[in-house]
Image (tube, rainbow, N blue to C red; front, side, top):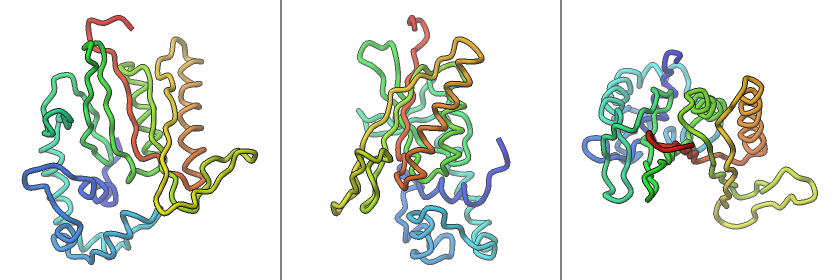
Length: 224
């Protein structure tokens, strides 16, 4: 992985919603970094908004400390929706990512598979693509789905005959997938990469946002 940028470190700590010393509001985080809540809010909510080099230099020291501590705290951990706590799982092997998420881990009742769900709303489009391609290349996962947010005023579809604009007061959401992550040949692997790129870019270029990605894994000892 390339050297982490300060922008990605900031996206990571903004996304931190876990307990302990890492609970914070946007106001708390802005005060720690020495910037205004307005600047932090614009960075979080406005797609493509970037902090100036001067601001990045100003926040570098406290941000590096926050990011390093947070990543150590969540290493090999996932959120368990049953206990609503972070748990360390021997089955969880998430790679180091530019924007490091805390995945929510769902294990099937049969015990034959598990699903890793990550909040990727703050990620760049290419980072979402890279994450899914990495999942495919690992050979561990056999399918993926995603949740897409449609902001107010954005079309729900790019198809001319079925285009409807979200005219409500809140964002709409819909699911895409499942799509395969298993390839039996080099040609199949190429097709999976093309499909990932097409699906993510198709929605995000139209102003819609992929906010969650789930990848499903068969657990050891179970047939695929």
